[in-house]
Image (cartoon, rainbow, N blue to C red; front, side, top):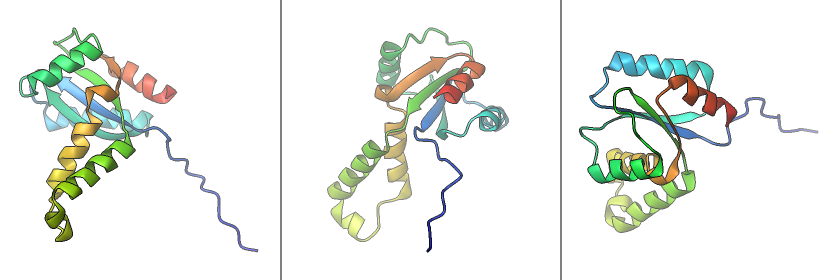
Length: 144
């Protein structure tokens, strides 16, 4: 007699995080302009950030260079990482287990959870696409 309505809004099955790598920190206007352009075309980007080469960990940059041939340092580079929700949950559980009392009293800050999620979402292991062209990144996101 009563049926569950079918969900007509299909959620993307695969989510990506976008890192815009630049030499210097981007202005908020430039960052917003790029994100608006991406949001106009695709809806499977769940996280985005600006990574600067000057402030990033050198080991992290070396690991990225080994994963993909990052040879352009003049323009912004667009890096797409596949988001692994299960790994994020596992890391959060490990944090809660490590700090049991803080977790019991709800004293683990949002910043600690955010740091874990950011590290997982921008891990070089999950890097699936790299380009200097925003249009190529949008094309990849549309296809996947």
